[in-house]
Length: 124
Image (cartoon, rainbow, N blue to C red; front, side):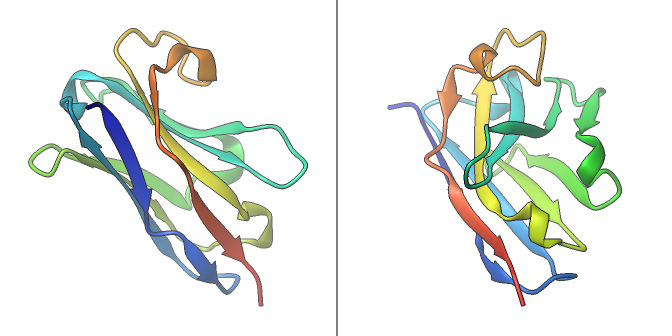
């Protein structure tokens, strides 16, 4: 059974850090393009970060550049999103996604598999 499971969300104060995990089962992540998306209340889901299969191309949305880092541990078949210097506007449900034939990593429709999401709340 193909599955992506996110974890690591929670409540954090502004300026704090969280590391989200996305564990895959039923397939090998290192053969896939991986993306992180988020959806804030009342807003459309947006791409946060993604990288190519070889990881030679890594992308971040402008609002998180320098604060978030995407990475992968092939041995654990898990992708991470390290989030530092968190801001209230980072509050959202965060989703990971995987796809074999992704050419436009910012487009949700190109990803075949999605996790259930994990809530991140940044508030004092």
